[in-house]
Image 1 (tube, helix red, strand yellow):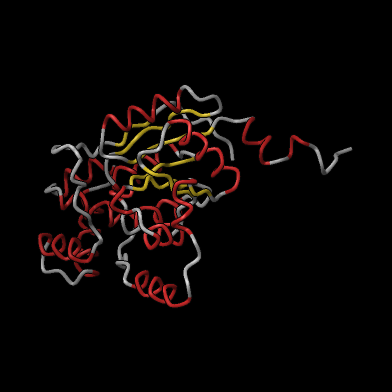
Image 2 (cartoon, helix red, strand yellow):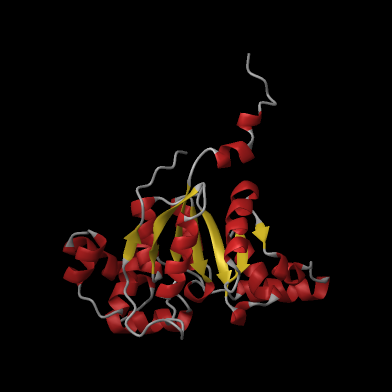
Length: 259
């Protein structure tokens, strides 16, 4: 006979009986290395890899299917990457690493409304990061205690202002694959190189480029990139990112999750 109160059926028991694959999207190598070490030393977690920019993050998610992906807000200030990752995998848990420049009630509210499951200061200590991953996985929502004061419900007047601000969030007119292609175009790559990176045919890349030009009402590739940066579809690399940051998506240990 099966009992409905069987402890093995609880979310807590399920989380403790399997290893969570954790990946990070961050431009700083030493931060990625630190999180990798932290995850690999934590029972119940394994390293799923890293990406240093948004298009590599989409590749990483496709290749390794992590349970949790930690994203630097400097690489996703408008939530475009978060929405694309979650649309491809609704079960994916997204944790935002909040930069100091983004530490405002408006940004926190926007990040959560756009789909982030948890928000943690980028300066958080290791044990707080581990706790955030575990708590967010169990509850599907977590705000670091240091950020709770920013999450106080706004007054009616300030709420209207927040709604207006969120309404000004840049719209994403491109598909997930078009977004990746445009980022690589912005890096100066030609169609053949883009096809090799994304494992597509050159003709498919050419079709995506034509669609991008049409959707952005752009005359050519350069004009499309200019429009995308002005509209907030593409972002400039964070100031503290290495000058020659790689777009590599690096898988970690073999994915052993079950869903």
